[in-house]
Image (cartoon, rainbow, N blue to C red; front, top):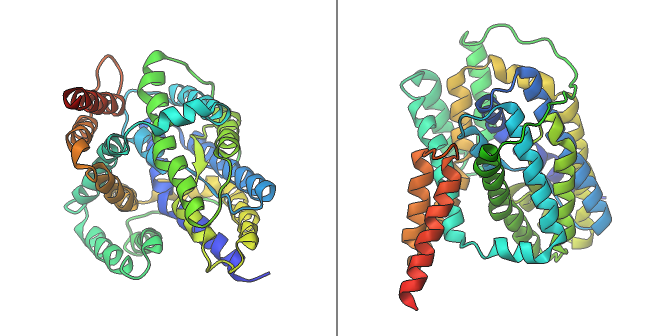
Amino acid sequence: MRISIPISAFVAAIVGFGGTLAIIIAAANAVGATQLQTASWVTALCISMAVETAWLSWRTKMPIISAWSTPGAALIAASSGFSIGEAVGAFLIAGVLLVLTGLLKPLTRLISKIPASVASGMLAGILVTFALNAVRTVPVDPWLVLPLIAAFFLIRLWNPSLSVLAVLIGGGFAAFATGRVGSLPTPELSTLTLIAPVFTAKAAIGLALPLYLVTMASQNLSGLAVLRAAGYHPEPGPLIGFTGLVSVLLAPFGASTSNLAAISAAICTGPDVHPDPAERWKTGPFYALAYVVFAIFGASLVAIFAVLPQSLIVLVAGLALMGPLTNALTISLKDEHERMAATTAFAVTASGLTLFGVGAAFWGLVAGMIVVLLDHAKNR
C-alpha cells in the first residue's frame, strides 16, 4: 500500500476537523448548549463520520468520505431563539428527511430542481454574517487578529486547505504566549450525553427544513459531483440514506447532520492518492480512524476552545467560511436570468428576518422561489 493513502486520509481529516470545529462550537453556543453537551455534540459527529466513511468506503470500494455539514452548522450558529432540545428535534427531523431522500428517488429529483442560484443565495446570506463578524474582530484585538488575517491570505496562495488550520494553531499559540489565555484544562476522555428532543413547529420550519435543504444542496449534491469528477459513479440513494440514518441515531447525543464531503473528498479521490482509482477507497478506513481519535479526545478539544479568546474563535469561523461564501456567491450570480431571485434570497437571509417565529433562511428561500416563479410566469 502506498504511503500517500494514509497521508491523504489524515490530511483530509485534520483539515476538515480543525478548520471548521469553531463553527460547530458557535452553533452549540447559539442554541444554549452546555460545555458537556457541546463535547457530546462533537464526539457524536466524529463517531458518525467514522462509521459512515468506514462502512460506505468498504461496501462500495470507492473513497466515500463523509463530513459534518459546515453550512448547516453555520445556519444553526446564525439562528436565534432555539433551545438545545429544539435543535436536537430539528436534527432528528432533518435526518429523517435525508433517509426519505435516499429511499425515494422523486424526492431527490425534487430537491435538485431548486435553482442552484437561489439555494446558493440563501447559503451566501447565512455565511456572510460570519465573514462580517470576522472583520469586526480587528478593533477588538488588532495585535492578535491582523497578523493572523495576513497569514491566512498568504498561506492560502500555496495551500488553501491548510490556511485556516494554520491560523487556528498559530492564533492559539499566540494567545497562550501573550497571556490572553489562562491555564489549560485538564485532559479528559469524551462521553456522550443524551439530550431530550423538543419538537416545535417553529424549529421544524425554521431550523430542520433549512438544515435539510442546505445539507442536500450544498453538501450531498456537491459531494456526489466530486466523486463523479474523479471517475466514480455510485448510486446516490444508499449513500444519502445511510448518512441520514446515522444522523438520526446520533442526533439524541447532539450531533447535527452529517453528509457526503466535498473538500475532504477531493483530497482523498484524486490521482495523488493512488494512480489506480480502485485502490483509493482505502483512504476511507484511515479517515475513519482519525475521527475515532477525534471522538475520544473531543471533550478536551472543546475545553481548549472554551478558554481561547472569543475574538480568535470568531475570526477562525469567519475565515473558514470565506471559501464556501465565495463559491456560493459565484454560483448565485452565474445565471443572469436568476440573479434577482438569488439576490433576493441572499438579502432576506442576511437580514436575519424572523417572522412568525421562523428564521431568515426559510424566508430567504421562499422569497427567492417566489421571484423565480414570477420571472417564469412573465416569460411564458
